[in-house]
Image (tube, rainbow, N blue to C red):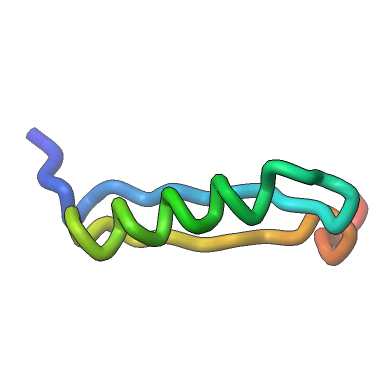
Length: 49
């Protein structure tokens, strides 16, 4: 069974997204409360496949 420490959330954001800062704030708050791994990736900076 996976514990909270095994969870990993990746939030994809962009500068043109009006709700991304609010989503980031929510996930950061939850990460501090529950202790899972959290990353924010800007879609502009992602390598093209």
